[in-house]
Image 1 (tube, one colour):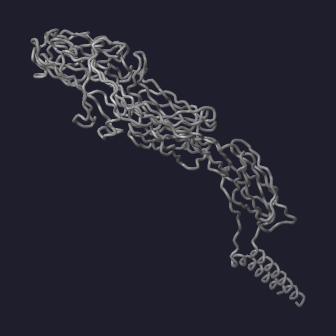
Image 2 (cartoon, rainbow, N blue to C red):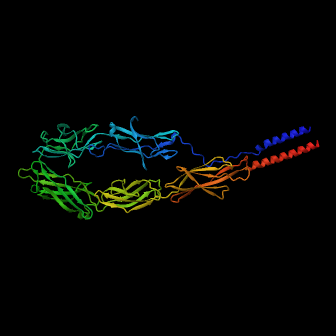
Length: 639
């Protein structure tokens, strides 16, 4: 009986010990991770921006030159573990040229890394590939060997560009001398190739005189144009056109072939203005102008000749009227009229030192407006000569300009640039005439560099240019220069801005082991970067969150710094989780300081860790067990 009672009592006690913890809601405590370890990068973590392309379809060059050039630029190739990929970090860096219509590859070649710019191929000659005239686009491929796995990526396609190889011929111009000689002068300002630039030698040139009435070619004249090095024109003088039909109107077309190097070229000009093969008539040369602007405001003009189709050049005694007129370039109606004199020695008409200031003061001519000049001649009929009149073509325009361009204001965006910022410099420029060129000149620490600013040609416009980033605390000096179409230069004073000093950036803080005990030392890792250089990094840690100890963090490669916090100073076996607090302070070479937030990790005791509620429950259960044992013992003594 005594043994049965004791057994039942022990069974009740064990059941109570088993059920009590769940009844009180016992939950184990696990430490929280401050920052998880960075995810291991994978092959898809290499990416690149869409390539930018620029194709130089035509730039004047020598016949042996090459202006069919392509620029390719990928501004950024990025890997998740190292950021921007530069020289030596990629084993493949190529660009491919594809047909736009079917995406098929035409050829590929290497890109090179250019500091502060990206992966590029500049002034890349397309001629070597013998491309057909078509539309193409660019795609780039990059590959990196990490030593563990191969990463690669292909960019999106660039915008399309059109590759051309053809002859372009300037519109023919001519001087038809008259019926008696049946000759004509013909010229064109250029024969050019979209690949080889301005041509000074071609295999043949052909003139066709097209009859205006029925658009049929009356006659072809082969190998007639030659290149004049002095005037830089393709021309023929006194070409006999007696085969043309009198009193019929004609236009001129120029053909040319060029096959110095492949691909072959064949060109056809537009048609010239029409002329009628008959006389007599009077032609007057275009007035030549020499304009002296600014304070003087003088205009000199010369008319080289007045030509009668039968009697040739007319002298001062042959002409009853030799006048000039000044017109507003954008309108009609003469504003100023005057008479020219004849120079018998030189054989030309002229008016020198026309004082424009008088007409400006009267409000007839306006500062900043564009004007041109025409000349009118009348040769009366005498001695069998037919009476003729003629006005010259308009001269080139001139602008009345008093002052050089003024730089009204300049500024930068952003206002306080960092070492990572591209800075946009803007400037407002104003002038009486048209602004021609605006230049930003900046000092890069060793020399002044000039960059042409972008803007719209007008009398008042905003211009801008982008400057590359500079180091922290670098003082950038810049000034603006501008000239107008009269080649007068103005400039601003020297402006300044200073690149601000940014404190170091502290990122990717982690610790190991992730669940330390009071016997473990804990390694703290942090990634720290700065625009110039990191000078010192310190780790501050505390057992109580009040008093902190400091230890220097050591650079272990790249931007990674490391330090160790000693094991938790427990004096006896610990049932609790204790908090260890830490923060990081980084200082750069300019003594700019950045301090992280305070982090904490939990230290688990060497004994089973329980929270205060669970510990109290265990003590209560133990006391209850002792009481039960004593009661059982008393029962045992009685029985």
